[in-house]
Amino acid sequence: MEIKQPKLVCLEGENKCPYRWSTGEMVGAFLTALRDHQKIMGGVCTGCGAVIVPPSSYCETCSSPVEEMREVGPRGVVMSWARVPEPFIDAPLPAPFRYVLVRLAGSDTSMVHVAPDDDNVRVGAILIPEFREERRGSITDIKWFVPEGSQGDG
Amino acid sequence: MEDVGVVGWAQTRYGRALVDETPQSLIYSAVTGALDSSGLSIGDIDAVIDAGSDFLDGRGISSCVTVDAMGAQFKEESKVAGDGLLAAIYAYMRIASGLFSSAVVVAYGKSSESSIRKQTRTMAEPFYLRSLGLDALSAGALQARSFMRQYGIGPDACAAVAVKNRLAGVKNPHAQLRKEVTLEQVERSPEIMSPIRKLEACPITDGACAVVMAEGGIARSISARTAWVTGIGHSADAYSPGVRDLHRAASAKRAALSAYKMAGVNDPLSELDLLEVSEFYTYQELMLYEALGLCGEGESADILKAGVTGPGGRTPVNPSGGVLCANPLVATGLVRLAEASAQVSGRAGDLQVEGARKALAHAGGGLAMQTAACIVVER
Ligand SMILES: [Zn+2]
Image 1 (cartoon, helix red, strand yellow):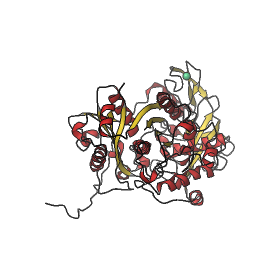
Image 2 (cartoon, helix red, strand yellow; image 1 turned 60 degrees about the vertical axis):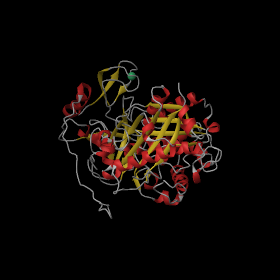
Image 3 (cartoon, chains in turn purple, cyan; image 1 turned 120 degrees about the vertical axis):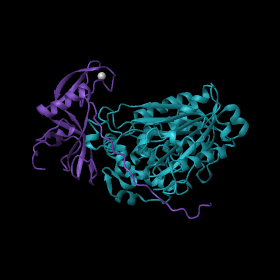
């Protein structure tokens, strides 16, 4: 049989699968400190001495083990930002908001996080974290970083 | 080490949503087209290296399903989880080792079948980045601002990349977007993730690309116009965007240096006749000028403005129109190799850079250009 004028068909589908991701010790310690103490902990590299925030169990710069933790921040400097104009599924905040790369006091690396869509969120600005009331051991236990002096007003 | 040449290539048509094509049908037409252009038949081929995305396909180990469409049945088949240009590097190594004499490299993507932004979010590890919803676009926007601030690059310089490449794409029969845009149109297009505007981002593209590679003896026997692979390089930067110097494409620099060293290229600006690079966003092409050695630090906007990388310039970049005119994701970098090979073998048709003898093909991967692959081809 010859195929004439084939009917174009798209099959609707979805891949959904739950996960239980193990944090490992270092990430687990970082997330626990956020949840239980509202503290931001960095990892100290045994090789280059860099304070890495958020931490991993090895240094992404020199490959040495990271064994110790040290509290950093809470203040941080904006290194870069990006404005999110439209809402999207899995967004951590209602749009508009901003992504920021923020370098916390005492840290040698920058952390990706979110901030309000406020013109004071610009490169070089000082931000401070605002923690959520209900924390569950997630990077989003920090609701966002807000320009210093303006926390609580949006 | 054996000489290795690119002896055939083909691209499928590209489209925003090719609902009348499956991954297999795209692969099949790319592979048969590439074989036809080489003069070899599938029976002559020893190895098939493919690149696809299980995430985009929505199924695991996707090459099990596509193996027959690739002509890889009962051949040495291996899949690369990355851009097709990396698959070409693997094929090169197989042939250069002397263990294989020829290979088909094929890469494909149907980005339209899922949500591309949601899929690029799966590149983020779950704890620090995915919970925040970071994806390719937002990571790119953070990098764009970091680069622009570091070197005082204005939005007009980034927008000018879109104008240059979209104009070049008008002549490219394979391009998905074949309509030129003005600087004003780019600068007035909506900010999809500031500082990136809509016309500064690559389109969503379905399509596939294949190339055929062969050892010197075979290449010489089937064609007098082979694109010889003379340099390869691949490099990966640190994963976390906040650990890297985000304003530098350090992995692209390393990958290019390896490829240049192998190919004996000392001054890419004068020795290369053109480059085909993977600019998913306009700012990336400027960053790549530096990383690929076309200019010094912070000078990318100057060489663009001076027309060095434009049509008829000293070293045109993306004479095909680049990724801004078609982004068949996963095949994106392999397309650069097909275009570069067409150029150095004098078979680029309307896109031909006159007298082109030596070219670089570049692929980028990961969030904010974490990884890079480079291949130098020459006549
Ligand atoms: Zn270190």
